[in-house]
Image (cartoon, rainbow, N blue to C red; front, side):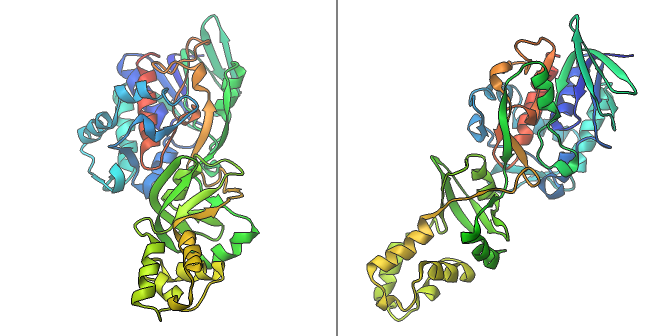
Length: 392
């Protein structure tokens, strides 16, 4: 029987950070990872360069049924704290758009840093280890499979969610939570491309590859980033962002030219360039393929002089207020994260410990806290792992 103070199930960003902090406190700590290696999502993130945090990280950048839950952990361990760790290891990095920080070289730099910190803190890491049993007796957890068992006083679940199953992601963390009667907010794909029905799908295939900077809105939430047409629907940062707020049956509103009042501009051009064809005029505002699609979709053609203000308004609304109803998403297969998870109402925001089960902790993506695109989910992993690591 292997005896530990702390056992952490899951060797991702949150699990490794928790292990580092627990180990530094002198706690005998083990990380148990089901995959061949730890840090799988770190390795592929940011196009292989790991978007490890965002300097503008605030509670408003996270979605949860309890929007205040993330505040405590983020306040105690913010972007500056992780940047300090990165700089301690002399990892070169740079800022891209909207405060996103990436490694200059490779995501492997972050993995190497975390493994070095774990080693310095005396943390053990076991990979290729699937667990099939968790028991609690006399305030001691016993976790085991057919080959081995581990005992610990503190058990940390850092298994992530089911997003990107090809990397071995599963819903195991939710099974653990249910075993101990914790509430689960229904997990759904987030930061994921949106799909559309037959009314649009063939049109979108003709537009596949077209990208444009937009404002996309769903309900009261909006994002200003790029949109990308694909063979299956819409993707790009703006769509991935809004997908966390979209629900089945809801419309999204896309402004394809947020810097242009298209109605006013077309009216002015009707006077100054009356012979210009509408699709030619629109091509000065939008990519040519998209401009043609808008005109064809609205069934409006001809020169500006031939168009009434009503028809010009129809075209303008297609550009500045395009209403679309997705029929779904591409699902967990391509979702970057999972929205939902272990309910924050059952956890302490200070320690990440289950309120009714002393010694049981949940951190990272398995918890009902979902960050926006751009380094925020990693920052939640670091912050929640750091928080738990100080109390396990």
